[in-house]
Length: 71
View 1 (cartoon, helix red, strand yellow):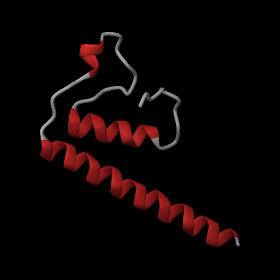
View 2 (tube, rainbow, N blue to C red; view 1 turned 90 degrees about the vertical axis):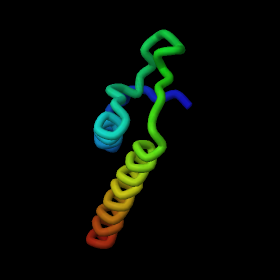
View 3 (cartoon, rainbow, N blue to C red; view 1 turned 30 degrees about the horizontal axis):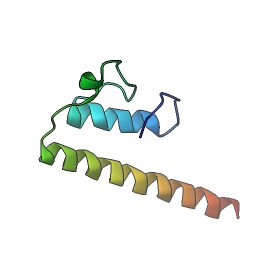
């Protein structure tokens, strides 16, 4: 899967999670295939996934509330 740096509203928080938990500074390929791979501890990946999941729940809740307020 290739990510492009199209500043989607939700991409920035996910990049923040990736930076904080995994030391990833960009989702864009750096040019050398070997530089696009990194070793990560399983607990760091788990923590990043948990934060991303929590973020998704918050966004989903906010969208649902906004839709209920409109209708």
